[in-house]
Image 1 (cartoon, rainbow, N blue to C red):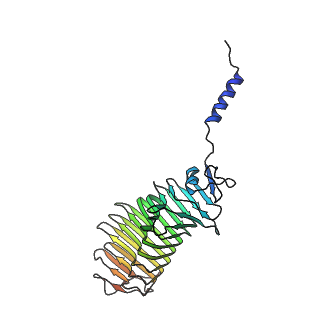
Image 2 (tube, rainbow, N blue to C red):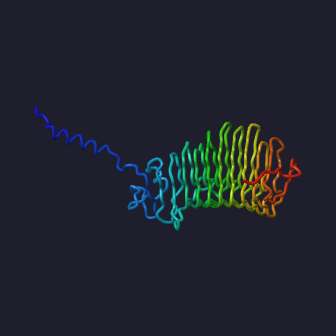
Image 3 (cartoon, rainbow, N blue to C red):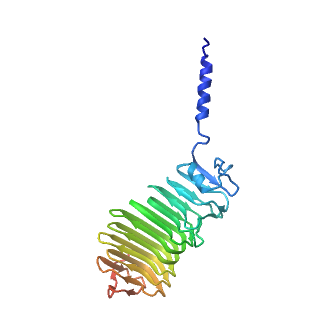
Length: 308
């Protein structure tokens, strides 16, 4: 009987281990480029072709970066990740008819920066988030969708921040839905929302929603902003240094809503603050705003508070 030497056994073990190892370890940062291939390891020197492949291989919490300007295809995200495009690079996503450019599933923390999402008046959603935990959108252009530019369904607590971005030409520019017993914190700063039926709608039932809008512009919408909902909801809307131009209604205020205004200017909108609800509604200003009051439940004057 032949007995294998210890050296032969060690060599065999290492050979098996090498055979079983994955081709590429997950990296904290991966890259896509117009000249890339999804068979590449997604390094800077050998980038991927699509955002989807890059998200598939990046480590949870990692970053996907576009090297050059191109279209990188729709992507579904089920883990925490950043997708970024540096200044001077236009990273685009064109979804198919009825489709979605970016789909977010699970309780993920997602950061999107420098992206152009083009719906071509046939795709349904620019960004569709299901059960989002934290979503940050910066320096993005989202336009021409048949459903919504951004639609977010939160879970227990969601934080959504949109900055330095433009959302245009969709029935809903931004739609955030807070489920029963949930909380949503929505912040907009330096955002333009234009040419939508509802520029921003916070739809909630039995929940708490805090919406803060600053240094932004809502133009050529039917309802620039709609807040409120069913009994049990408490929606609070803070508006600071916001311009409304040529909307039907500046803010459609439903039941159980608080609206606080500072330096809000309404230019040529038809209805101004439209009070469609009467239960639990409060709208107050620090005296620096210029906006009309209208609707079946409109008060004679706004309440007031001291500017701090």
